[in-house]
Image 1: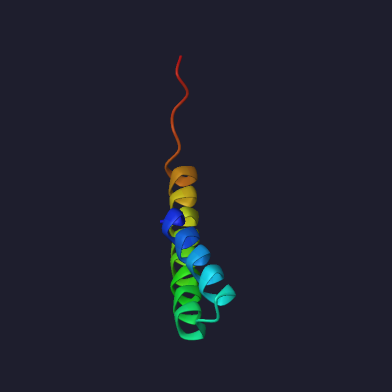
Image 2 (image 1 turned 120 degrees about the horizontal axis):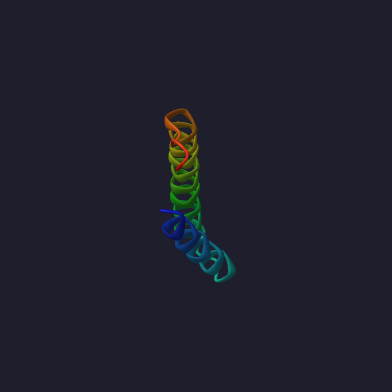
Amino acid sequence: MLRWAVIFFIVAIIAAVFGFGGIAEGAVDIAKILFFLFLVLFLVSLVMGLVKGKAPRV
């Protein structure tokens, strides 16, 4: 998912350089949504891993 956010960010940068405002805005919005969705899923996974924990091997 982070890969898709980066891809849309790159598309937005390229579109902005060539002056395609509408496409750039749309790509930026999609990149932001995907990035924050990725961040939320990462934090949920991190918390669940810490809460669940693993027993040490003996």
